[in-house]
Image (cartoon, rainbow, N blue to C red; front, top):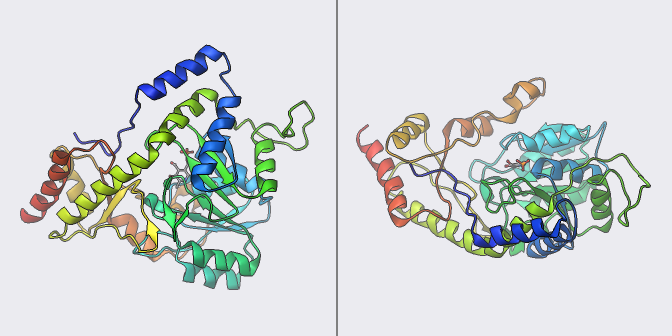
Length: 361
Ligand SMILES: Cc1ncc(COP(=O)(O)O)c(C=O)c1O
């Protein structure tokens, strides 16, 4: 079976982890500081605060920006539920706004319409599947209403928008290093930001409200959302290979797109001003469920991200939301393997599987 994801752990990761284990410094420490600095630099941002996962990175960013009870955060209903859960964990409420059908990201026109009508305290832009949202338009709205723009970059390590790296496009950006992501630390996350106040608040929040210099004066109530040094060691090795991983994903995506040109499926779009990093290579087809089953029978794994929009999840059933583009996308999307370890034969097998399915119907 060609898997939908295949985390790559090499000898470098193992050696670095062994060094950390030998050092005895297993929890927070210099290894985590080094990873924060290196990853922030990769994103073109000034500072990074490592966290235990992507969800805690998002929660931490809201706390650091003082978004909480009584606040409303505009976001996409077409994301992993963590985007919305983090808003609620901070005590705020998500306000779901529909997506653009081409990019699967927030539709800035729809955001504009909502922000004109209602009080909104922040925007959370998800860069779904590794394609940056339309950040210029969202920045303009955030600027006009003087509210922060937060990036949910959990799926978009290395992506760019008009030449600028994801992670440096708003007031704060949050990444996940879950094993299926474009780079991993096992479990892990990071908040990156150019704002000193946000970095300081975030570093304190993940460490029980301690001031940066440490000690036992707790200036706010916080959490233990710290990253371990073991995770940071894996992350530092992965970060060195991230540019190669991104290029391999982009090459695989280009081959899939050209191989699928004669089929009826809609392949992913990459607007000229953006660099897609293909965390997922997601096609659209009205035959989605039958195709997924056929591929499975023929040795090709696939995934549906996400079958249920967040506003239709039981935990969010009381929210009001008109998101027909999202609802249709949820019925039609299918993600195909695009990870760096695919071989030329694997890609042929995927393309042939889809062509055969169409021919036999
Ligand atoms: C868009 C998005 N946001 C947030 C998260 C949460 O990250 P984590 O699973 O590391 O908590 C994920 C990861 O699954 C994600 O895909």
